[in-house]
Image 1 (cartoon, rainbow, N blue to C red):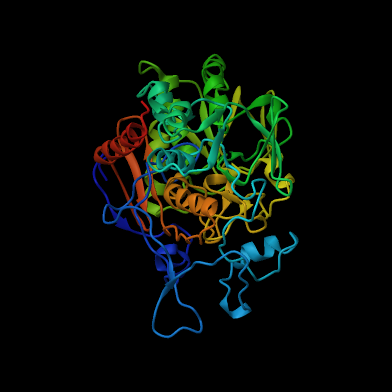
Image 2: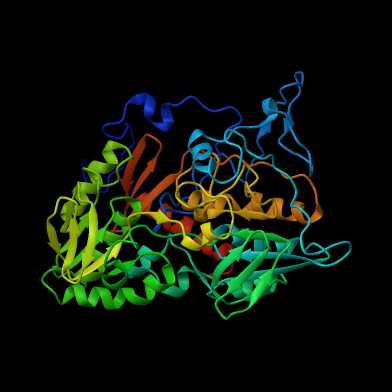
Length: 491
């Protein structure tokens, strides 16, 4: 098919049976589709604002097992206990992961207000927002419009800005200045009357409701909300700390990328990017554009993925087009390549072979920050904070989590779509928790929109079993991304 032409196919990913694809599964009771969030970026997958038919977030209606024909929302008061037949059940994967965390296997605590914390009676309560992720940006926006009385709100983040990952590949390719890709956390906090503490968190104690910061200070909370994102998978590999550049955290990646690309350009072995998903493919396109400079042939660039083809799990037509674009831009795809160690000369694969590379970038997906699982919070098997449909911790009702650091009960992938869409329901439930009011459940959409930029102004796109590409898709992505930044005063 001609390059840059529009294409939409209801094809399914290669190797996947029709019944195995989310588009062919039976719709779960109470599930709602909604629009996606800002466009695909790095390192998350699936940036975009989705189908334009619906806006906002929706409550999940559920039927009481002893009720008649009526319907009621999933709300529970503090201290209520429900019978086994009345409890919603977490997915089997999450039930198994929580079996050793002190929670009853097969049961998930009902959404409930936060338990009493450090403040008592008429004392001022403290809400701590840990991290400046996309969901917390929505919370700050809500607080600016509706500030609760008798509440002190504190935002803790190591940086005064939050880089929007959907636009970072555009910055790498020279499309945006880095300032245009940032959300002004300090300014948003000031507008909302929120105290901003520019420190990194080192650890937390969920039982003591205490947070330890990098400067040695501590911060107690009545209600804690965690939106710290994730770290790059593979950072724990032997040699990775000394010889690889991880995409996450983004600020560290942006600060070191120029030096890494210059070193790659000066070496015949060039650059190796570990990962085969949307984030890694989009990063490879952007780095190739930067390394080519004014159009000259750039250094060697290879993309190492565990699957046979790039963008595994997406429609086959998108995988095929991505592979063709990689070849056109001189990027070598190496499938079935699992990296087990990294050294100064390159990467070692599980088959025993060694691939030379002057610089290595880790973009193989999301992993949980280790300290999240060391504070007493219930986590899933991968170390992400286990939450219920109200985004409330399964083990500590005074703690909420959203974004990449949270393990949703519906089992959604780590995607910016879900991080952004979690913002409004998270804000609503934080305010309800501070008032002691019943919480509201949230049903995230089942599909995410993928928009993957490449350097000629076009973008690959996927929604469920549909796949397409073209310049119009690239324009759509730019509008989505720039509108998201402008909404919160960035750019």
